[in-house]
Length: 153
Image 1 (cartoon, rainbow, N blue to C red):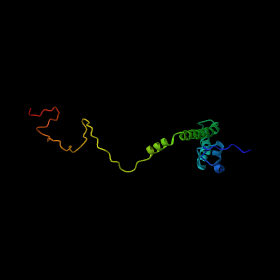
Image 2 (tube, rainbow, N blue to C red; image 1 turned 30 degrees about the vertical axis):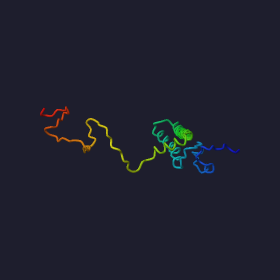
Image 3 (cartoon, rainbow, N blue to C red; image 1 turned 90 degrees about the horizontal axis):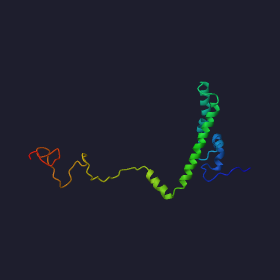
Image 4 (cartoon, helix red, strand yellow; image 1 turned 180 degrees about the vertical axis):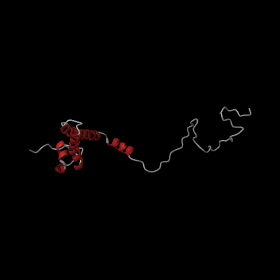
């Protein structure tokens, strides 16, 4: 019996399959590649958690069987979602992938930003006056209300 051949989508080479943890091999994980410690936490950790909860009489003893099974279902579901994401990413044209990569790369350095010349009421845009503008000192001739009339008129 030769077994099922792995597709080109698999991220783990066939010759390295035998070195993977038993938990990952039993679930048939192809895209999620948990290490030994993570597999230990997935299985033995969930059994220990369920046993502690059962000993504290917070849950029934069935949870010792159901919690590791639920964790295994979630890990397998995560692997299937990862497969869907990888397959859909290969359908995106190369130019779109390059554009996305450029957008997601962090920008390091300084960028010169052009000064905004829009006038926003009540907001100081420039501290220094523009060249060629006449500035009246604040005092007798200035009208703080902006009505266009001086104090003397």
